[in-house]
Length: 254
Image 1 (spheres, rainbow, N blue to C red):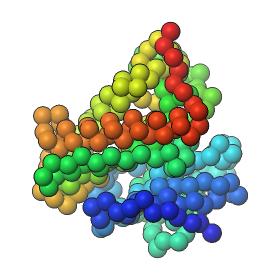
Image 2 (tube, rainbow, N blue to C red):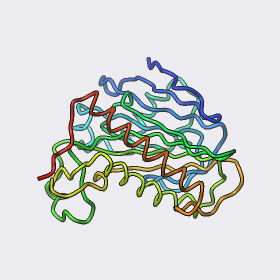
Image 3 (cartoon, one colour):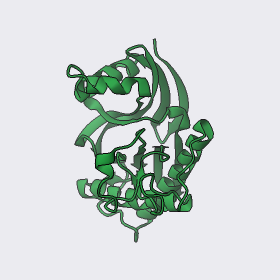
Image 4 (cartoon, helix red, strand yellow):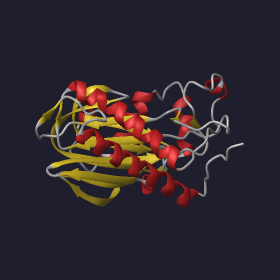
């Protein structure tokens, strides 16, 4: 039976970490309960309307299951979601999903606000083994990583975001993530003399709010600035939480 720990309520968004087991392997998940059916843009699932967002921790003993013919990715995620959400009356079709090898106990979040506007980011981050400089390491995909690492970002804002604004959030989030990696001097795990821009498996979900409608969230806007600050702060803290919990340290430059 799953048990949960509440992280609090943020502008009507209820956040909790649910501990559960998948195929007898202990795991956990960040469950974000939205106050209403909401439009989101997911880098994994595209544009959809959801009531819940889940960031799923995939412990290493589960990884071999993903290479079995009978265990497709979709089947696996339905199994994981079924375990994580068994105590809630939630349809898996109304859930946006992220996955990571980072335990949700290492989660970080940060909020920025100005007047009635706000931006809130939840981030998990593992960069010790899979950080890379995108486009500069042609053979890293062939070499692979000994252990996966992922930066997962879930972004909420007060604004009602058009589809274009949801897409533009990905640009602002990505730039802010790079700022966080620069602040911590994270180098590529593949080519340590290069600064990292992310990992090979980063995931993003951007969530629309219910405030005034916004169609532009770039750097010259107050909302864009708040998104960047929230994502940068949460990413820096998530990486530090990972280091503190695991002892993993970034690759040193050469």
